[in-house]
Image 1: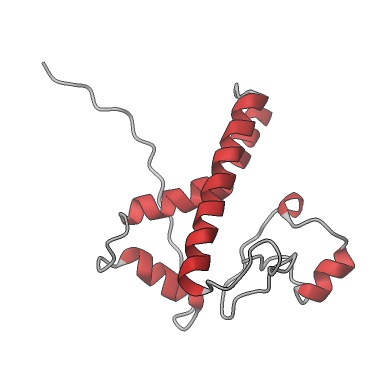
Image 2: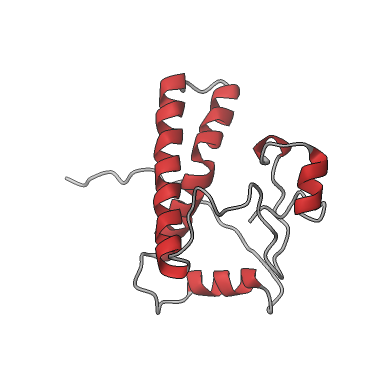
Length: 144
């Protein structure tokens, strides 16, 4: 008796960035096999889940999907925990003297040589536009 294979959702993307960009360094890291951290697929999905999963489910609910407030809240809390844990790993590895609560600015500066990622206005950090424009050179597309 054969087991039926679960249906798969196929998602493919093609990304082209300038060769001398930090995005190229990142994408090269993700696609090469010299790292022992996790599979390329899991690295990508883990990052996407932590950043976008609750928002994707909220969008699903807005389109008629059945997702409760409790599920969204639990999902968001799990993502926040994952992001905090990742922030702590980065702090310990690259800037151990940094106090995450006191030393980080309210908004981030763009990385050099990155392509813009369109981020919906409602996901931008709180604060007035003048404050945001001064701290980010007026570019709402560079948030990391």
